[in-house]
Image (cartoon, rainbow, N blue to C red):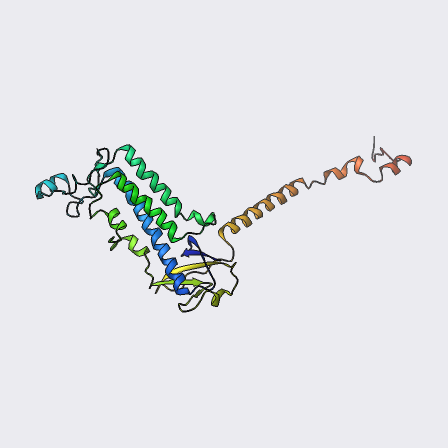
Length: 290
């Protein structure tokens, strides 16, 4: 299998296995699905701690308002009593006024947080260092426990406007957010390798040959963003190793220079003619008045 090290810009994303016979259209489709799936898991994992700390989100028309404003406008949250956490709520006020403050108890909170950590580890970028390839099955394995943990803590479900429920139901609204800039549709995704765009309609072997043991660093880019920066000739880790080697070499040369002392050559024991002078009685001769 050909191993693709997928990057977005200079940042590693994940490893992906495919075949040289695979059409690039299929490869791009699979890579885009995994890329967007990982982003979805990350978005859910960033929202669940808020759910654990401050409960469900308020209706959009109540978010950001003070208690006095809500009372003055006579607004009510119809989902507050319907969506109660298991074991009863613990009040933790949301200072930004986005969630209702009726948080799960510590035991239920621990269930949510543990599941979040497990899901994040499954699709982590550290899998690249561990040489583990990410698949859509792994993305699903990360999503399903998150959905299950939310159902355990909120058996009656979350309100339809809660971003976590919207993510699970694939109807999230990312317009106007930073997250919307990260998401990439299949049609706008381009795959680049060695400074060249890998064109749809061709196969991977048209670019890399028929060796199934090939390892490539490819970059995904949105259409219209232009060519991504090419990979450096040496990796960051290799550069660090070279700098360390250079530093150690400089230290060794410095020690040798400090140890390069010729003063011992003036000592009697270092005189090669000492024995000859002794036989000839020429030792201990001093010139000048005594």
